[in-house]
Image 1 (cartoon, rainbow, N blue to C red):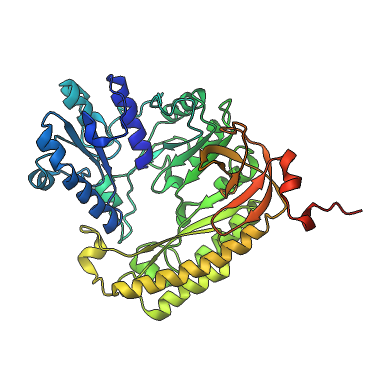
Image 2: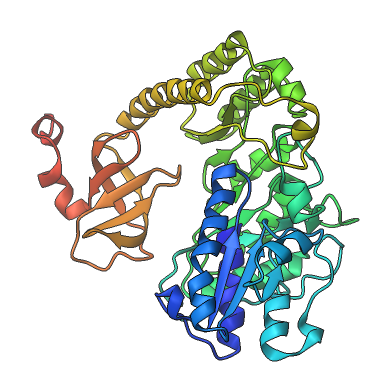
Length: 442
């Protein structure tokens, strides 16, 4: 979401005549877009702010804009007192205050982002920043802002406001504009993306929105994240299975494998509910890949409860597990009512156990791609090799002198590892394959 927000800010600034510089300290306008979902991210934001003090002292005319979840939607008076070097404070997804400051046009400043106002800077076409125009292959498109679920560990509802679905016309217009600028793949975003349209009477749901977007000419791939187990519908799964542009990759966090921990998190499902959901996803979507999120060291989590999480991950063998150590977020229910009683060393131990387990699981899954031909959408060149992703969101590297950006060639997988794979284009695949795979049987 922050990547999408930053891109929108850059586009708004270019519309005002600004151009980007690679050295922040030399810029006339510095925008620090922040995340506070974990303590480490918040600490990083504070550190970067402090590092800008010499810049402000040397060039008082430089405009410093603090944006995102550190600012939030409920006021920032304490931040103003702590960081007087900041000229403008912007809530998440809202370039309005910055543009109003730069143009001295208060009509551009938006209302409280927590209200159900119109999305003034998200109302249709988006012109990409110049440095990305014609080069960006995959783009994020927010469809639901904020969240009204409020898991006990999560700060997002307090920082990004209540759940608001964007009008379908604005979303489709943005997708069309991105495709016209060279984008081949879009990912629809929401804190609980499956709840798209719940707050719009008689509006389309996520499955229906995807069917509308699927008709956009020139668009090659559609993804969406992040889902919630309670809002993943059969209609949505069937939509993924039926539509060729929708990729067979589902991101649906479990967070924990113990029912009591899940209840303490206010996830509102059980481990068996999640098992049944995974089974249904796999039954309805052929060759699907599934990603999950897991938090270790949640307040009160016993060794036995952690073991149930370990056992669940070992049993389900999911393609991706995003792991996090619990950190207290001031203002959340967990921070107010629960003691962060798991020592840091123990959180790390549990984290590493899951990390090691998942590495083995993914190594086994990815080994099944060895010798297979897979369609890969290439996005950019990294250290001399082209990087792209399969429909199931596996990263593939290929060596080629051709310009593969935005191309979707079949790739023969020649090597697999837990975090990425290597392949070769059809003309080179035979030479790149191990001898035992390259032999053609009689």
